[in-house]
Every structure is written in structure tokens, then in C-alpha cells.
Image: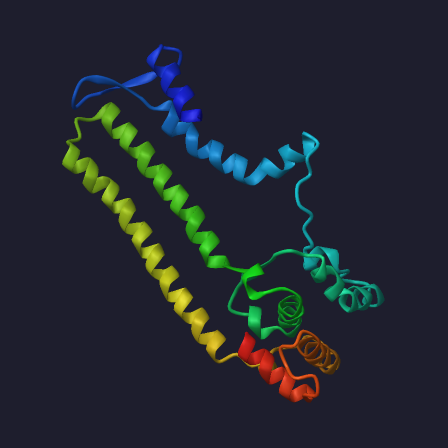
Length: 240
């Protein structure tokens, strides 16, 4: 819609345009110049705008901010009620890094959610994917803007323009290749996952967390009801 309005405004002379020095004809540029910044602004601030209009949208439970990080008593109460929070959640989004499945508390969150919801309700989003996506947007926008400048001030031939944009395309390909390697690394780590190898900042919490994971696995039917804690944890390793 924004591009259609911009195109109409350019055609009627409301918005400025440039003259292509290669073909000597007017070319609109405002749509390409404003479309990406508008998209990014909506991506970042659409929820705030939606809230100002009286529609708050879905409620999000973010463990880092919703569980107290300083008061140990309040923190323990929040941890003990973690399953209750997750039981009222329709979807779990995990921002995955190399250390995600190495930390016992994040593993506990995964165990709690998978015991209460089918695995299709869990979304894994590697942090690098976000980095690659936003860098891809930036590279594409810079390619568009550089093309506009070159067509305005030089007689850059079309094959040179294609080559120029190919440089930016190459950067995108490098990013995609790195992302493919990251996915392969994630699959390798998951194949070798074991809850016993997880890191716990406070070792005194380890028995509590492991016991709760075992209870959840038995309660959800993912492990036999008479299984020992160790057997239930093995079932969790296979599920992960």
C-alpha cells in the first residue's frame, strides 16, 4: 500500500524524482528510500502503537524479567511456579545460543513446556538468525540506495549495476552459509545432549531441578509412571 501511494504521488509530481543518466528518463526513488525504514519502524514499534490504540495484544512471560534476579526468596518462589506460567502459555519461543542447552535452568524450562504442550508449540530461534535477518535487510537497503545514487550521478551501465549489486548479494550468501553451518552445529549439540552435562550456577539447585524434570516427564507420560528419576532423565535427553 505504501509503495502504491508513493508511486502515485511520484507520477503526479507530489514526490521528487531523479533522472537516470544512462537512459535519460525520470525515476522515482522515494518508495525505495522510505519503504525499508518504515518496515523496520513497524517491526520495532508496532506493539507500542497497538497498545496506544487500546489493543495490547498477547501477554508475554519473559523469564529474565518476570522472575526476580536479586531477592533469592522471591526468585525461588517464581522458579517453583514456573510450570504454572508455562501451563498458561500457548507457545514458547527460545532464543537459542551455544550455551542454551548447557544451562540447567533453561533446560528445566524446556522440560516443563514439553511436558505440558506438544513439541510443535515450541519455536527455536537462534540468535544468529536474527543477526543475519537484520543484516540482510541492511545490505538490501544499501544496495538499493547505492543504485539510485549511481543512476543519478553517473552513466553506470546496467551490467555494472548488476555487478555492483552482486557484491552485496555475495555478502548475503556468506551470511547464509554461516547460518547453515550454525544449524548443523545446533543439530550436533542436540544429538549429544545430556541433562547431566548442563551447567548450574548454584550446584545446590541441581538435585531440585533434576527431580522436577523427572516428575514432569512421568506426569506427562513421556516416561513410565514407575520409572526412576535417572530413567526419566534419560527419556528427557531423548526427547530433547
